[in-house]
Image (cartoon, rainbow, N blue to C red):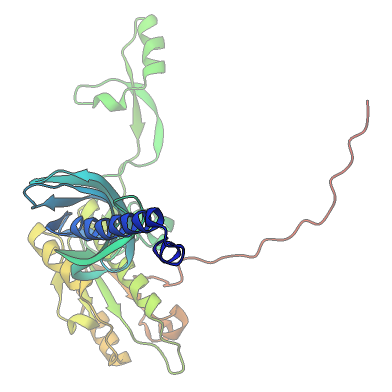
Length: 360
């Protein structure tokens, strides 16, 4: 409008063009001013498990004395791997606004800085202002706790232990039938339909009767190794899955009350207790920072298996396929965990046409 006004010697067009140019300049200054004087704070757990959702809060603190901040879009790259988005419509001067977000981190490890991109189209939507910040908040991510399917197939060590050093488990045995109530029976054992019928006939309440409980090992040892025969492909994703199976195994043993030691090649074969709370708190960071050992030999694995106490249940986990190391395992009662926990089967295609319905 200014150029056309100069050619046509039109003062109105020149004035309108100058006013528009001044408006664009003021809008640009306001857009940049809108992102100044801001601080960002992240409130989240310090320790989490991978792929486990948790709540976090992203706060914007406006330190300016007079003007608020408008239309802020926050794109947070949590742990540099997860993209979370938040929107702050208005943050008053000398005040703060907080957004609640649900997130989960897929990979284990420790990250202290989280990149965050702040964008705004205020005012008038003519310009998009951006500001890149790094939010300081250390998060230690433990491996995802996966319980091996071998435990589910063998009754989770209840009614399945056949080695030495056994103890009674908490799981009840097989149901046998109903019997009259006796002092000391728990209320949850009462069979209410049968009790109502018995009380209607003037008899005592009826409770469920079970066989004696099963057995489980008194102690256990989890042996982790990275040994495999030659020409076996080494995959990083299998090492991460193996750590997840180790974490799930140790967590399962703690839940059923079996003291367990972790013996791993990445810990230089030094037994690590995991049952007590303090020991468990020390084990989880070791799993979070673990790196694959590339010097494991067959004799190292055999030494640890043969030196394990006879009353310990042995669970052997590896990031290598079972066929690559199963042949070196000695003849001893133990549970071998297959790293290939998921097998996808190809479904047959049904190409037959459905039969036509007969008209009645």
